[in-house]
Image 1 (cartoon, rainbow, N blue to C red):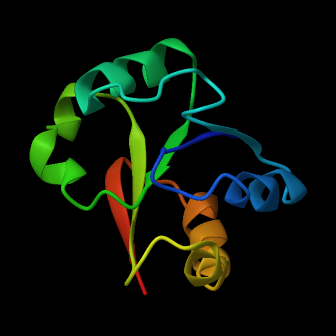
Image 2 (image 1 turned 135 degrees about the horizontal axis):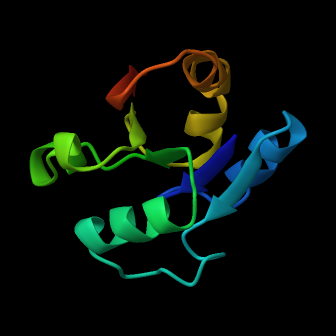
Length: 108
């Protein structure tokens, strides 16, 4: 499974996904920093990513996911620090094992 981590996530989180066998890239890895969400989702699709992971809980209000054949995992947490998100990894991995369409949210 090919994952794209939004620029609002700690870069070192990518390595936890790689350790679990995912192919994980950050927006920075792809040289997509500063891209608007619509353009970012178009690039996501073009490059064959499976899931976009973000802490941007406004994304679902900004984009109509019926227009994009993408899976977006939105993490709702008190902050986006590595330690906070690390504590949610088991929930994130469980979510990635399930099949879903559109957006799914993980609450801390």
